[in-house]
Image (tube, rainbow, N blue to C red):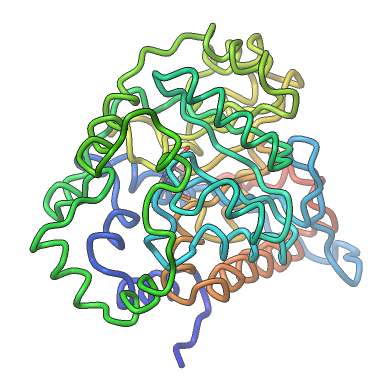
Length: 382
Ligand code: FNR
């Protein structure tokens, strides 16, 4: 039995258990991966201020709200396409683990399990992430399905008007949707337990799209349809279009610029997520944590500011809160957990981050997560 002490342990275990093309789909960024790497390495240069004799209570309080929804800690599971390829029924298992931990789970438009699957088997209300695809009838149907599933929050992702290239995906022959080839077959056969689990579920295609997109009779047409749907030219009017159709909370994801954050506020966003898609889109962009302070300063109290990208520990959660984030969303950490140990692995991921957050708060002299602010940070050596 592997000993799991941190997120890296989950990553290494996932690498051994998930077919290479799906593991590398998660474990990579776009082009030179400079933004992907900076997302996590920039956290390391932010120093926390150690405090002593701080009159700590017996326990720390991490409870908060994110976009008005109660959460036991300021952490949510970010949307990820193909989550169900890390582990059979992956979206359902991740949703269950999130419900168990009392944090939000966000289902991607490009999930394997459908909105209805997760509503029926996931165990709690979940958030839905929407891509603004070209076919607006289809987008309206997705919104209606998310409403019917009682999703309280819609996360609208804006940073994918084109696909950033991930070299590993090209080398591994991973397309959207995945195509069958000798190379991909070899990757799958190298992981027989993964294959056996996958054969035991009927959820193996894009659950939200199959059967709902117009005229998609086979995989090739579906591939062409999906690719074409993403080549869109969004404007802030499109965000207003979604706002008019979504009565719940609306979060705009993929904001890296203070001006864009203000546009999102004007378009009716209840929160923005400072995000560069986990370093999978614009290589050369700032890391999310480097972009955060200017965006927090620009929006002030107009809307909540969340962050994702590179959060790998409870210490990182506190660093983001100290720089003004209301909460963070994690992607790869829980995907590694899922690939490593299914639902148990996602629970382990959230337990690790919660424990690290609580201990770090204590060492910084904090009792309540809402005490976080720039005073929690220490100046590093110049
Ligand atoms: C993503 N991300 C993403 N975002 C989104 O809005 N819709 C999606 O379908 C996906 N798909 C996706 C797949 C995979 C494999 C990854 C790793 C990421 C981006 C995701 O929501 C989030 O922004 C990043 O994952 C955050 O960075 P970390 O935590 O992975 O470093």
